[in-house]
Image 1 (cartoon, one colour):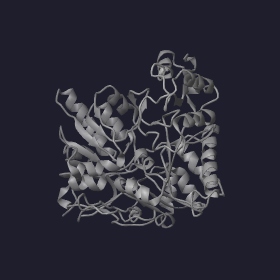
Image 2 (cartoon, rainbow, N blue to C red):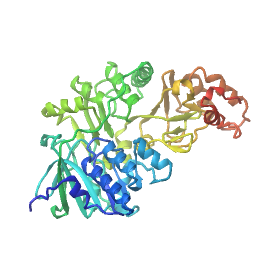
Image 3 (spheres, helix red, strand yellow):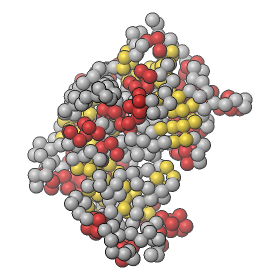
Length: 493
C-alpha cells in the first residue's frame, strides 16, 4: 500500500480530544517536532472557539520545546509521564494544570502492556526511513517507540530528512516477553545485538507520514568549569583507586552515566585518566564527550537509548557512519535501563543528585520537597542494581545560597541503602560498610562545602543519641530559611 503522505496540520487533525498519545524518541533526540506543534496550534484554535481539547502524553523521557513546550503553552495536556525538562511544562505540572506521575523509565513500556495505564491510541514517531510494508527506522532516540507503535490504533510518522537513512543498522529493537513466560534478556556485553534494525508494524495502522527536515533540539552543554572538572577528577580518582586495589576487575566494567553537564564532565575526566583502561558503556543517554573519546579509542563501545548530543557531534557521526555504526547501538529504554541487565553486567553507575543528606539519601526530583524539577528518569533503574553506585553534585547552588547537602532530604528518590558513594568538588564519601553516624561524618568532612560544615556539625550536636540521629524540629530548618530569606547560610539551629 502507498504511504499516506500529508502535512503536519492534516496529520494533527487525526488526533482527537481525549486521545492518549505516545511519542517516540528519548530526550529531544528523536522526539517528534512538527506534528506536536501542529496539535498545539489546533488546540489553541479549538480553545479560542470554546471547545475542549486535551490529550494524555507518554514519552520516552524529555522532549524538545516543539513538543512538550508547545503543548504545555497550549494547555493541551491532560496528563504526562515520565521524565520531562521543559520550563513551561514544569509550570503546568507544579500549578496542577496537568497531572504528572513520575516513574522509573524502565517500567513505562511494560506497564502499558500490563494494562496498568491508559492504552495509547496514537503513536507519533520520528523516523529516518519508513517503508510500505510497515518498517519504521527511528532516528537518534528509541524510547518507548516499539511498544506504543504496536499498541496504538493509529501511527503518525515524521520522516525527517535531517536524519539520513544510513542510520539504519544502529538500532537494536527488542521487546521482552511478559510474565509468566519472560526469560532473561540475552544481552551479556554492551555490544550484543538481540533484535531487529527497525520497528515492524501493520502498515494499515500508519495513517500519516509527514515529511520534515528538523535538527534535534538538544541544547549545548555548558563548558566544563572548575567545579565540574574537580567533580570529574574525583570520580576518576576514586575509580582508579578501586581498580588498583582490586575491587574492580582489571579489565574494568561498563559505565552508566546520567545526563547533564556534570555527567559530561565526569566522562571526559574518565577518558583522560590513563590508569583507567579503555571501557564500554551501557547507559541510557550517549552524550557529547562519548563521541570524542570513542574516536580516541578510550571508549570502545556505547549502548544507549539515545544520541543526546550537540549538532556538531551528530554531524560527525553522520559523516563517519561506517566508523560509528559498529560502535554504537540504540535500544528501547526497557532494555537500556533494565535492572536485571544492569545487575548482571556489573555496571558502575554515575548519576547526579539535586540534593543529598548527611546519611546518603538522595533527592533527584523535588525542589524543597514540593516543586517538581524534571523527574527521576533512569537513575533508580541503575542505582539499586549497580556494582558501585555513585552520586555526584556540586556542593552548593545559587552562588552558595543553597547547600546541596542538608540534614534530611526534602524528598527521597534513592535511599541510603542503594547509594554507595557521594562525590562533590571537595571530595569523596565512601559510604560502604558504614553506620549512619559514620556516613554522616564521612559526608560532612569530605563533601559538604566548608562554609556549611560547622552548621552540619551544629545540627548533629542538637540531636539525641540514636542509631540515626535527627532532630525532627530542625531537620528542615535550612529549607525553611531558604524559602524565607533565599539563603541557607542564614540558618540558626
